[in-house]
Length: 336
Image (cartoon, rainbow, N blue to C red):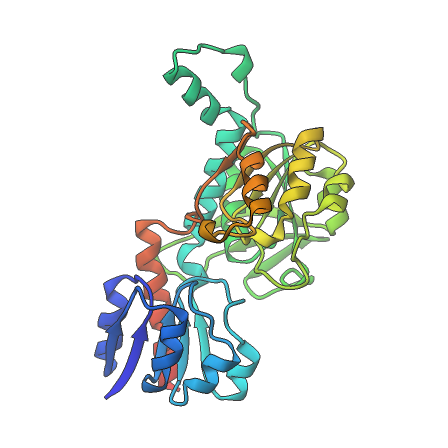
């Protein structure tokens, strides 16, 4: 019987589905990367989330591997090129948590706009400061969405009814015409539908622009990018200085898209008036250097910064959707 190693907590439907396909599943959610490397030669498939790195060494060790299944979207932890050379299918399920990420980003934006985090803390400490906590409305504002794949488009769909002007920059997706999109006019697109039949996105239009326009015209900038060398520290000092307006920054993609030290400086001088961060350059707090600990301690002192522990796509519903989408992908590949 073929075997699959499941290296992280997943919804039970994924393992039930794999077993129906004839696989025996070994569930080891606490296994380390080193331990995985030692046993991977026993398995025909592996299910990973974020802690296991399927690099060249892991792929060489996994001599029986047919597929690597990534629960989620971040593929920087898999050497896809080498996997293809070895005939190992690499599958992911980015559709599964796009709604969760979009809702989280929207929640961060509305919390920042209305000073909800600060107001909550003050009222609970018997401090009543109405004028200090006067917020702003997102209606009439321009939001720049950088990266218009699964999560970027899901966020746009939620904003369309809020009276916002929506700009997007995506170097690889919007190239005049893409399947699933209807071109309405020059650089204006509409989109309906998605692969998940139980969910429907629908929004009238967004405008594709270049990155300079995002920087020059946006009041709010939200990042929805995979981590690649090309976008590492895209939001750096040059980016912040190039923004013509004082911006609200949202990052629910990957931490290393934003250079933290430069963001702190931008907050100090008012180039960034608020920030919502679900992801960070280093998310393993036990490995912080003294400089990192000092840097994050300073970041956390800003009342106009709200943070969360990389949970934007981590809802009860998305756990099931992620598993369902990945299972379908595995079925499709193995059936071929």
